[in-house]
Length: 86
Image 1 (spheres, helix red, strand yellow):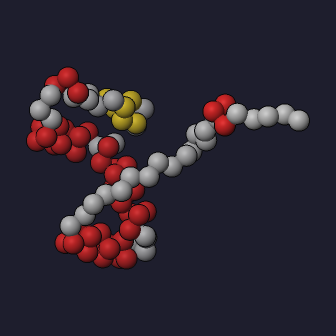
Image 2 (image 1 turned 135 degrees about the vertical axis):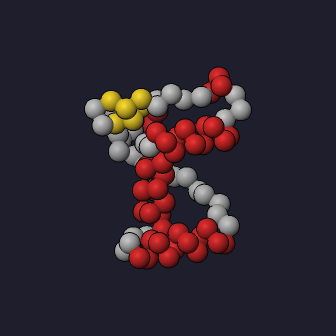
């Protein structure tokens, strides 16, 4: 009998990582209405919005200009072959 150690188990390359966003009621209502109009779930739309945001240089720059108070952690987005990397 072969014993398997769960620590040796490979993780999937397409594994999804859950993020719980806490939204105020107004933002939740907007997300719900926009998702409905796009025939998507709220989760699918939120995923699309986050993916778009972390891959758009102007949005990255906006957040860092307004919220980054420590240049040690500043990311430098670089666009290569149509993809944004940090």
